[in-house]
Each structure stands twice: as structure tokens, then as C-alpha cells.
Amino acid sequence: MRVLAIANQKGGVGKTTTTINLGTALSAVGERVLLIDSDPQGNASTGLGVGAAMRVRTLYDVIMEDFPIAEAAIGTAIPGLDLVPAEPDLSGVELELAQAPRRAFRLRDALEPARGAQTYDYVLIDCPPSLNVLTLNAMTAADAVLVPLQCEFFALEGLTQLLRTVERVRGALNPALEIQGVVLTMYDKRNSLSAQVASDVRQHLGDLVYQTVIPRNVRVSEAPSFGKPALIYDLKCAGSQAYLRLAREVIGRERDRSIESGASSGEAL
Image (cartoon, rainbow, N blue to C red; front, side):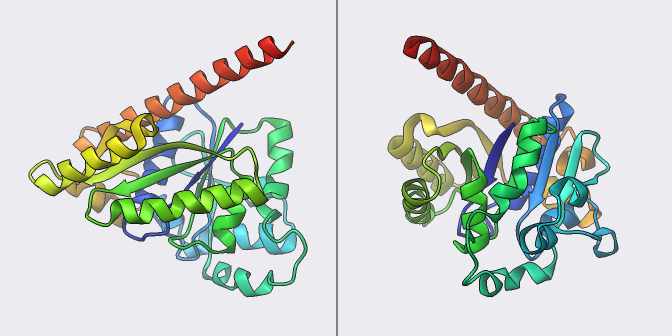
């Protein structure tokens, strides 16, 4: 089981959209996926058609009440994709955990039974657009971070701050944390600035940047209002096809990592 935190402290970069559609694309190719909505706004839950009345148990119960994550997870309309929903009460976690022991490890501890049972192939955590205790919990629980990056002027500045945070988490809480990759979102081929930002990001980060670029797409923007991932709302649109390509890249990187890890283990023996 691989746990990926989808994180960027900037809002409006396509983070939740990427989480929903990447999860849908992974499940479409046969992977068992758990999506954890770690944003008090609950947009990932809404985008998967899980309304407030259906959120009987949420991530709040998992983090604050030690409720088993397997019992908090509910099925969605997408076969193979389960969800741990969010609720507004999550916004109070920062204060409630202020003096709590292992405050950054709550989610990691909750996921251990799922790791042991190999219930899922992928766990995707939709982080809030801030570097708070919920984001810290996600990064501490994760094997790797996937960063959606909007093709705009301040993109690199925000990315630098996030990479520093990942380094701090790696040093203090989770030494194994990696960057799975950076995905360029909201790319507008008619806008020369998008091309310039994409070029700058690739120049700075090289192979960390996925080849797949997510275009700015009306159908992708419309889908959440219908409680559906874009891949269900309009599979043939450019945005949906891009997310399918991204899922293949993510799986490919994980396969390469596994091969490299196996080779390193063999050399050690």
C-alpha cells in the first residue's frame, strides 16, 4: 500500500480536483483506492457525491476519537474507490490537539491496520490549503507527496515553501518521505505565461515534474457541481484524458521505485 499526500499550501491550484480524478483513474485501471478528505471544507467528499447526511463517521472521528479508519471509510459510486469524508469540525483539530501526545502521528497510527491488511493499493490524502496540523498528519502518514502546481506567476515561490516543509517533516517526523512528483495544472496553451511557467518549473525540478500536464478545462470545472469526478462526468474531455495519463505515470513511477528498492535490497544482501 502506498500513501500519497496531495498537498500545496496555495488554494485554487487544482489539488482537490487532482485527488478526486487521480483516485478515479487509479480505480478505473483496477487499483484499490482509499481517498481521505483532510480538508474541513469537505470539497473532495462533495465532489464524489457524498453529501453531509452520508458523512456519519468522518476523519474527525478517526483523528480525535481513535475510530477505526476501516469503519469510517464508505463506498462511493466509483467501484474500487472508498472515501473517509471530512466535516467542518476538522477545523478545530489544531486547537484540540495543541497539547496532545503524538499529535502529528494520529493519521499514521490510524492507517497502520490498513497497511498490515493490504486493504488498498493506494491511499490519497487531500490536504487543506495550509500548512497546519492536518497537513502535518498527512505528510507524516504518507510515503510520498504529490504536488499540484498551477501554471501561474507565483507558482515557483509557493513550491519552494512547500519543499522546505517537506524537508522539515522528513527531518523531524518522517525520514522516508519522498516527492512523488509535481503535476502542472490549469495549463492554458493560449497563454504564453503558462508555457513559461511550465518551462521554468521543468528547468528547476527536472524529472520530478510529470510529463502529463492538466489543461484548463470547462468540463473538469463543471463536474464537482454534479457530485461526479470529471472522468465520470465526461470521460472524453481533455481534462479527463489527462488525468488518465497522470495515473499511468504515477503507477509507472511506483513500479520503478519498487524495482529500484528491490535491486538495492539485493545488493545489500
